[in-house]
Image (cartoon, rainbow, N blue to C red; front, side, top):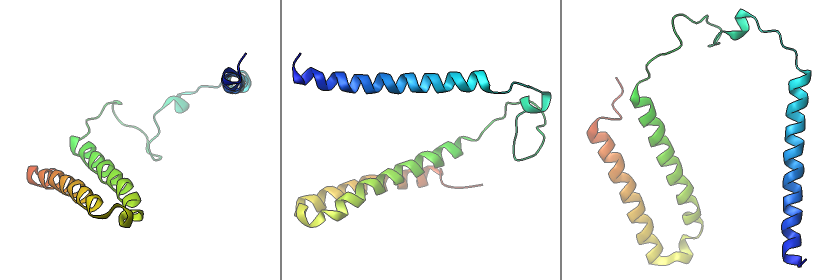
Length: 121
């Protein structure tokens, strides 16, 4: 067998060992855990308050939009930090590229403001 495939056999062996380890630990915890379900244990827990009504409730879409906007600007920061580190090496083309990137994100933010997405009631 060539040394090329011996490396893959090593990786596959470690993967198989990891899989066996995970399955065996989960199996041991399943067999050793105490099982005593009571009514209180099966209730939904919410900050120490007893649940009232059904388990279904309607959530406002604006929470998801705020979450998406947070992720958008969080990812923007992830892209801006590496650029700031090597900005001198990139020169003017790097500056133009990052300005276009920031203007595109600013356009999205202005669109969200214009649509009233960020207006909290």
